[in-house]
Image (cartoon, rainbow, N blue to C red; front, side, top):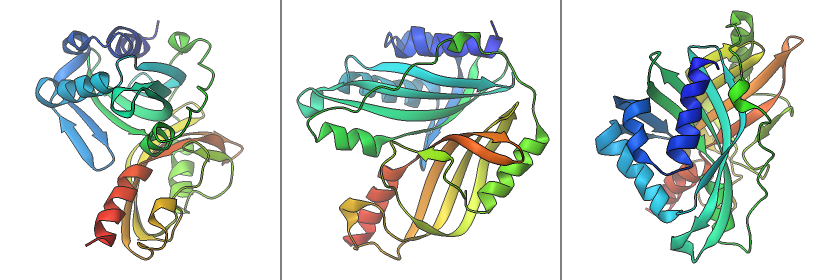
Length: 260
């Protein structure tokens, strides 16, 4: 088995799905860092494990299903869903997608840049039922490393700079999302594995609508949106993929500004 994939299997099977945070000391460095939206959770024992335990308390039966894994041996991207019943919402069930970009040092995990679709989770916890869980990857632990492809990385960087045009990529849970008139796009992370390219970007500009709960209150407000994506490159263009955005974080930030 690919060494990085074997480590991620322990992360999914032994730690997350068993809710066994004692495994973290074996698979993560003490200075492990998780970045999600504008938040930085730095330190395995003092910050990350308590945050994970809080999640497990809210969702006592939380499970993680892997949909895709790609790696070049040095970096790894995993697209997944988490799902479970929330004790804080009377047992309401939700399914929400996520995309993580993992780094390691050849032995343990050192960092994860991730987004999870918490806006979809909130919608489901307030409604009459969950979304469906997508089909699992048929053989995620048999994934082999693919080479770094600089041309694919350059193409995706250009595509990002051009505003991520086209309709080949699916966003979040497929529902409407925020529209931003970009002033600046920062590529926080980007790597390739064969014809797949993973990235994290931050888009900063002005909010033009798309988040129903805000109505028109925040139109024109300064906005910052974090996104993690995994796309396929073929024939000199982006031909498919998935992107998860921090829609809930943006909605909360805009709501705070609109109510001041």
